[in-house]
Amino acid sequence: MIKMKISKAFIKKELRPFLYSTIGIIVLGLSINLISWKFKMVSGGLPGYGLVVNYITDFPLGVFLLISNTIILILQFLIAGKTTGIRGIYGYVLLSIFIEATRKFFNINLAEVEGLKNLSLIALQGFLGGFSIALVVAYDYSFGSYSSIFPIVRKFIDIKAPTLFLLFDALLVVTTTIAFGFEKGYLLLVNAVVFYFSFKLFLRSFKDEIAKGNSIFYLSRIMISHR
Picture (spheres, helix red, strand yellow):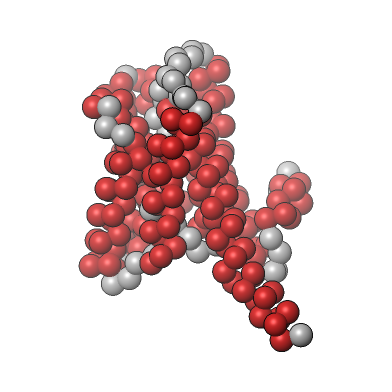
């Protein structure tokens, strides 16, 4: 009986967050590779900056994320006095490796698309990005990126995570527009707005369900209740 209680407690406290956060990171990695990178578009977040660097210099996105997130992790410890620990390291290392590995495994090649298909694809990536990152954050994991910068910024400014993410993406929109033209910047803006609302919706919903002791399998009911 005692062993059964310990097992359930372990699953709820450690295994469930690990599994769901891993799913979130995998969905994020796939959405970046199969949508953003494949169609040579820039999506939000630190991976978006990595995509800009990749398109200009051909520097591997996964390596960019690995290096930049390691620097952010060190700064987080020095400035905020804390880090995301093993959960944060696991998250950004997995995302970096997964992005590079799946690109080679699926043999993903660049393909340009135009018009409404572009718009719908980048909006879909924003929605999936909001869902996946909310899932990771809700279970107290981290994939690096803005979520690791957040504690550093909060040391100086009282700001909410979705708002900070939107501000960083606004700077990325300007950078993308200068580097690749108005259309790419406009598509990124659409991506950032869709992500903002998707992230807020799912983060609130996931946290509510976790507080009730429920799991991600309640997602269908969550989405229905918000229609």
